[in-house]
Amino acid sequence: NGHQADYQLIDRQAGHLLDMINQLLDLSKLEASRLTLIPHPTNLNSFLKELAGPFVALFESRQLTYRYTVPIQPIWVAADQDKLTRILSNLLSNAAKFTPAGGEVQFSAHIEDVQTDTLFLRVVVQNTGIGIPAHQLPHIFDRFFQADSSATRTHEGTGIGLALVNELVDLHGGATNVESTEGQGTTFTVRLPFSRTAEEQESEKPVPQRPVTLHPVPSTKPKLTGQKQLLIIEDNADLRGFLVDCFAQNYHTLEAGNGTEGLRQAVEHLPDLIISDVMMPGMNGVELCRRLKTDERTSHIPIVLLTAKADTESKLAGLETGADEYLTKPFHRDELLLRVKNLLENRQKLRERFSRQLVVQPAEVAVTSTDEKFLQKVFALLEANLSNADFDVMLFSREVGWSQTHLHRKLTALLGQSANELIRTFRLKRAASLLDQQHGNVSEIAFSVGFSNPNYFTKCFRDQFGCTPTEYARRQVVSNVGE
Image (cartoon, rainbow, N blue to C red; front, side, top):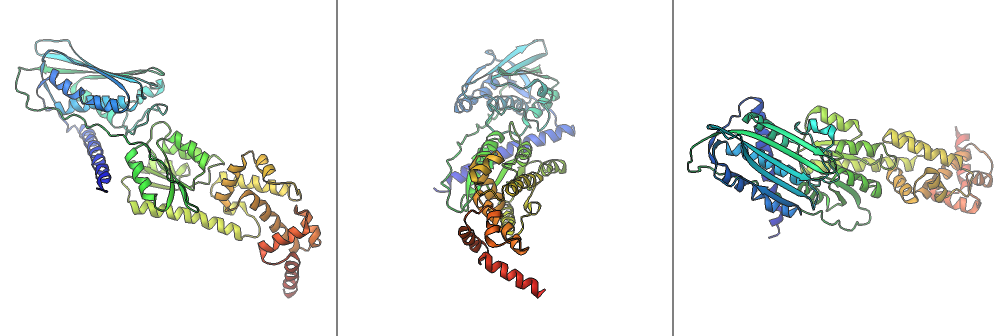
C-alpha cells in the first residue's frame, strides 16, 4: 500500500538504531568493566563461513569484488560468539563503506600457534581504495573519529564501530593492527587467543549482520515560482529522504550526500537555507559551515546543523562557525519546521527593512561580518560610480569580481533587490537626499546621480517615492518652513 515505503524506512532505521545503541551500551559497559566474555563451544570453521558468507549480497549491491577464506577443518574453541561477530562484522562493514565501486575486499581467517590448550585466530580484512592518511592512523580507533576519505566514501557512519572493535579485541587479550597506503588501500589485522575445547553440539549461532539497503538520491521536483529553496546535506540516505519529505510540500529541495557535494551545490544554487548533518565523511558539517560563512557568495545563507553530539562543546563549535541553529538528534519534526520557517521570515524582515530605508546602512542589514564587508564594498562601488550613467550590471559584476548571475542571487538573497534595482534605488535615494538639502535643480541632481535623461529620472523617482522630484522638493521646503 501507500505506506509500505514508510514502514520499510522505519524498519531499517530501527535496525540501525538498535545496532548503534547496542554498540554504545557495550562501550559503556567496557568503561565500567562490566562487559565480560561468555564463551561457548564453537566450531570456528562453521562460524566464520556463516558470518562471512552473508556479506556477499552487501558487497555486490555496492559493486565490489568480495573474496573470503576460512579454515577448512573443524576447529573447536570456547568463544563468545556475539562479541566475535561484532568484531568481524564491524571490520567488514567498515571495508564496505570505504571501498569505491569497482574495488575489492578480502577477508581471510587463519589458525596460528596451535598448542594443546590454546590457539590464535588471525583475521585480515583488506580493501582497495584511497587509503588513510598517515597522520590519521593513530586516531583510527578513537571513538567518533571518521577518517577523511571523502573521495571514495559515500555511505554513512558514526565512528563507533572501529572503537568497539579495538576494545573488544583488548577484552579478548588480543591485538589489533592497521596498515594503510594512500592511493592503494587499507589492511586491518586482528589476532585473538582462544582456549581449545572438545567437540560439542553448537548451541548458538551468530546472527549475521543485516545488509544495509542503499537508496539513490531521488530526483528533485521542479521549483515553483516563489518557493524558497532548501539544500539538505546528509550522508544517511534514509534520513536525507525523510528531511526532503518534511519540506517537500512548501519548499523546493536540493540534496547532497556529503559536505563536499553540499559546498558545490551551495555555491552553484545559493539556496535560501541549508540543513546539514555534522558527522559526515570527508568535510564534516562544522567545516562546511565555516567555509560557507567565510565565503562572500554564501555567507548570508542561514545554516541549521543537525548532530547526534549533544555536548556543549560540540554545540559551541558549530555556533562559533556561524551556524544559525543547532539541533540534536533525535529532533522533533515540527520543531525543525518551525525553526526553518522563523529563520526565513527573519531574513525576509531584514530585506523589507532595507527596502523602506531612505539611506542605505549596510551594518543594519548585514548578518555576518563577511556580509557587512561585502555590502561595504558594494556601496563603495555605487558611491564611486554615482554620476557614471554607463555604470550598469555588467560593469557592476565585473568590479565585484563575480558573474552577473551570482551577484544577482547574492543581492536578492541579502537585500531583496537585483543588481539593477539596487543601482537605481541607491541613486534615487541619494537624489532624494540632495533634494532635501536643495543641492541644485531637478535636472542637475538627475545628472549628478547617473541619470542622463531627466524625464526617465522623473518617472523612476515617481515609481520609488510616489511623487515627482519637484513635488518632493516642494514638500520638503514646506516641511522645513513648518519646523
